[in-house]
Image 1 (tube, one colour):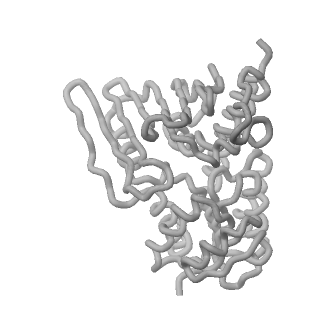
Image 2 (cartoon, helix red, strand yellow):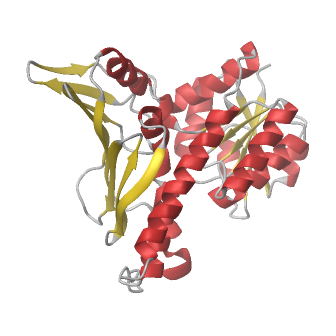
Length: 342
């Protein structure tokens, strides 16, 4: 019988992404337990897949049918739940990004997995998307050095990220928007969104520009968004995100310019299974669009976890930790720049 999966969290990502993904990999996994934080949503989701449900993590981690833990809770809880899963003797962990909200917590959680020999996959679905492998192959074989990188997101309102921004210092519906003229508020918005949204693509950026150097500019964009520029490995990187009520269709794209061409990887909207990202390469003498693949990054990340369990492939613990350090340093330095007195 395939290993049993216990899912901590019962939000939209679990309902729309992880449950359908595990169902497509029924030869490798089966969901046996879903836990929420008291919302009651776990019972409804568990009923769909004939699984148990509970609130909190105690019952789930004590459930002998749970071999693998999927951590899909708020980021501030990830590190503690990784530690609890390791202590409970679980065989493997898939944790949504980021692993932790501080470097110290990430080090403790990842080292616990390393010492116990527990495979850990971080849900960086864009990095696992087959399209990124195709893009990376092109960049490594085209011969042209990377000149610049940009990541552009234009997104419709998303309750999760609006809540991240507004929870402590801004509005729920009916109250005025966050006062981005207040440096402390603007800094908190930038930090929260870099660790909540940019975190999807920073492993891809680090793949090409691994040595973080400095933040050049950073600002919060109304109503919810950011513009950040930094330099890594001598390469300028620009991150731009905005969520506009009633705005255009979602756009999520990473663009890489070399001295020979420009490569665009355009990802499907969040919370859908629509196959891989699209890859387009444009140069003076050609314009190539590669066919999209049926599988997506969600399938690939769960398949990678299956490979770790079934084939005993090595876990890149150091890479996971370096991803966290890179992202958190960027977020902290950008927030400091935004919050600095004029």
